[in-house]
Structures are given as structure tokens and as C-alpha cells.
Image (cartoon, rainbow, N blue to C red; front, side, top):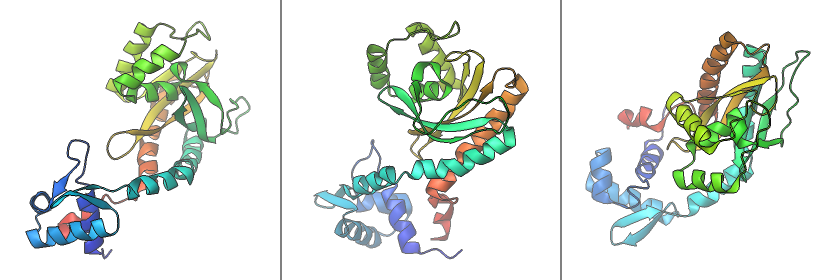
Amino acid sequence: MQLNNSVARAFAILDLFSERRPELNARDVATELQLNLVTAHRFLRSLAAVGALVAVARGRYRLGYLFADLGSRVVHGNCLAEAAQPVLEQVTADINEASMAAILEFNMISCIAVALSRRTLSVAIRVGTRMEAYCAANGKVWLAHLPRPALRRFFEEVELRPLTARTIASRGALEQELENVRRDGYAVNDGEREDGLRAIAVPVTRRDGEILAAISVFGPTSRMSPEVMDRALARLRRAAQEIDAALYGRGALSDHMESI
């Protein structure tokens, strides 16, 4: 596929900005992307002219609030749910158990997309269903990805009530569980919110590593055997990549930079 080199270079420049490097000048851009200094200056000035960058000092730029506006449009346009829904439907078809995507809102998990199994015994979850984060697989994934200050606030604000005999209702025990989630890259709910229900969940992350959603497969404990859980985990990890591709496009920008 023929790329527009100028567009690709512009986005490569924008991708150089980060929390650790909020400002850049032409020399930074020229060095990072192997451009000559005149070309780097021209791109920076052009991006500033359309509001993508803002000049903070002579020759130095930061990201403009244009991206906050664009990000708001993505969120309110429900892009995440739209990207997740067809992927979840295929996950459910492959595993023959229900699947869902959830976000964290006000210390609770909220379902934004779901695909239900056609099997006789199934769990009824709908878009908009809210659940306690500390005893749901999706919720544990979210809590494991929270910055430490946000996780401390969660523990200060939420009462860890035992909903079943298996609920992890101790802060110390839950913190250890979240460490395991960070290490392993997935979370399990084994009858902790509802007796007889087992679930496994993985994160869907942004390109900078921040979590966007948690996706899970869930069903009756009698059917969610260790073998099914292993299959579900592998399929969910692929599903996270498929949602990423739907959100960002299948080719990462860096894949094309050699041709620019």
C-alpha cells in the first residue's frame, strides 16, 4: 500500500511526545527520526499551525489541546464498545461461553459490550450491568492497572464485603492477588461474586500501556474447567490484539517508517 510520507512523518513526530518528554525542538525530532533540521522545523511549524502542537518557547513545542478534543469525540462516540462487540461475538462462538468488555466507573465495573452463549445454562449480563470491582475478574484486571495513588483511594472508599464464601475481603489478601494479576497478565474470579460462576479476564491497553478495558470469558463453574480456562485465556489474549487493531489499525506506524 502506498503511504503518504508527510502524514506518516507528522504522526511519527507526535508519537515522540510523552510524559517524560513533554516538549521537543527541531533538533530532537531530526535526531530521533533521522531528518534534516530544515525538514524537522517545517513539520513542527506546520503541526503548530493546525493546533496539533503549541509553541512554549522559541523553537520548543508541546502537544496541543486539539488531541483532548479528538479524544473526547472518540470516548463519546462509543468507539471502544463498537470495536469490542464483534470481537467478543467471535470469542463466544469459539469458546462457547459468554464474554464481555468492561470499564471502571466510580469504583464499579460497568459492562460496555457483551456476547452471550446460546447454551441452556448461561449467565445474564447486559450492557450497563455494574458489578463490584474487587470480586470480578474484569475488576481485578482494572485494579491491578491503577496507579498506586488511585488504588489507595479505592481501598479507602470501598468496603470489601464478602459476597460469597470465596470473596477476597481482606485488603492485604486482595493486594497480593493484584500483584499476581500484574505478574501473570490475567485475573480469575472463582465464585467470588456469585457461587457457581467462574471467569477469566485480560486487559486491553492503549499503545502507551494504559488500560482501556478488561475483557473476560465467564460461565458456570461446572463448564469452566481448567482446560476451558486455558483456551479462554489464549483466545482473550488474541481478542485484545484484535480490539487493538480495530482501534488503531492493523499496521503500527513504526512498521512503515523505513519506507519514508
